[in-house]
Amino acid sequence: MGDVTGLVLGLVAAAMWGTLDVLVAFAGRRIGGVASAALVVGSSCLIVLAVAVLTGTGLPSDPRMLGLALLAGSVSSIGFACFYTALRLGPVSVVSPTVAVYGGLASVLAIVFLGERPAAIQLAGAAAATVGIALAGLSFAGGGRPRFSGPGVPFALVSLVAWSVSIVLLSVPIREAGWLSASSAARIANASLLVGLWVVVRARGATRPGEPALAPEPEPPIDVAALTAGGGSGPSVAAPVGARGRGAALAAILGRHPVELMLVAGVLETLGFVAFSYALGVAPAWLVSLASSLGPTVTVTAGVILFAERPRRVQWAGIALVFAGVALVAVG
Image (cartoon, rainbow, N blue to C red; front, side, top):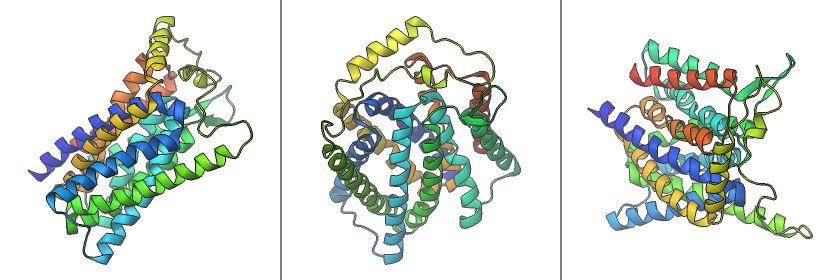
């Protein structure tokens, strides 16, 4: 029964996180990746702490468990900062599936460090997802060297590693001290580092002559299709004018309220985080991680429909392999 609960809650987290990724992609291109991460995680931290206070839940009393939770939150902050920067740089429909493979990597780490034992078909799924990263995140221009298909992909790779490590670290204090106690400690470290980084970024930006801190993007934030228009296998596919127009119109409306969008994203992040943390306490970490990594199905759809993004055929194949691999691991 615990596996079923973990799978369902993992899917709930995936839906919440996939939706907030779309909001971050809109607002992050206006205020920056670090600012987006600080606003989302900071507001989420306040909500989690409020729940802990209302329920009388304190931080882990065992110093070792408290240390692990704080360490998990610190590592997770690297993932947030890099991922929101990746969403800002795009392309969204490649960045998000790439990060989704944190579920497969977390499964490997759970096998090695937590002693969990997925079935053979699940291991095959993790391998398929790894190949999918290479295909979705790289393009080949004119038969030359492979290169990243978008400027956001390197940040996405750092993010997936950071989140995989943080999941394994956090699963231990959650099972020992309870999901809310451990999650509160992790979120305090997470938010503190991101808000601190945001302050540093604002201060550095303000010291540059003629450049206000966190200035809005000077270019339209929606022309993401151009990021993948210089190479790859096969001819490029132009984005339909109607799709580009819809995306630009929606971005213009939403882009005027980036802070409000980030606060809404903070609520979605909290709902996903609570579901995910509780699931880690009742189900294997590999199962919860992989279920929660299905969120990019929401993001890819939005990237294609709203942002007029057009991944190439090799990248579609990679995205398909990512989803197929995650599905194999979860179903197996």
